[in-house]
Image 1 (tube, one colour):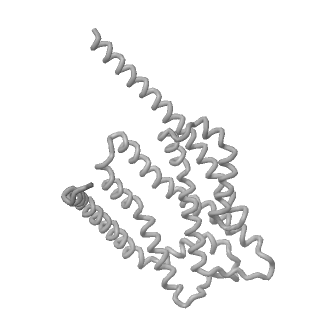
Image 2 (cartoon, helix red, strand yellow; image 1 turned 180 degrees about the vertical axis):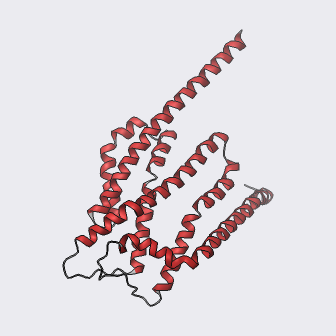
Image 3 (cartoon, helix red, strand yellow; image 1 turned 180 degrees about the horizontal axis):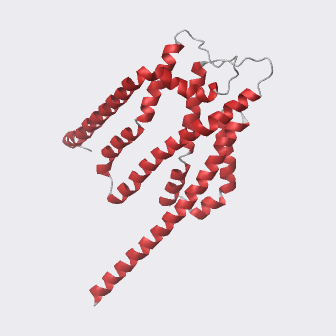
Length: 265
């Protein structure tokens, strides 16, 4: 049985880690709050910019509406809060890295840091792809197929929920190369196995597009095709990493053999 002294000593060893975690969480909350306070005076302009892909495609007689009385205040407030967290992702990941790095081996540090950086960049790239490519095509398609005599008046709250869902869907979808590379690095799978599973991935990409996007063919296709292309990109980089790993392993084996031969001599 574990004695009380051992339990108390193990708890005391964890106290500094909890204190560091509390400090870093506080810094993250303060940083998000500062970003929020800076952006909130521009909340109306930010929402107008977010709604621009829809507004540019609306007929002249149509406009956006607010169904709830408090929506003109709370919707921009919600948008700025989400945007503050979105902008703070690199800072949040930095503190996550600083908290976990002391407990990692040097080899793990070399692996984790590039993954954190590249995953952040890919997430932002996915969100940008959604805003600049998907939204204009999607909204023009929706408005073009609207029946005659139907006035399109989108609620600002529902529009925000719609685009935020797409932002996160495309942001996480663009993480596919990271997942692919991790599967190969951790020896869970191989590039040959991933290549053979390509047909299943293509079907799965369309299923994911169906689940994460609105029920229309355009948005599903615009999400599924990038997932497939990013999967191919992940396989390509996985092959390069595997070859480099094989070369480094061969060099290490040669060095060990030379060391053993020198000792025998």
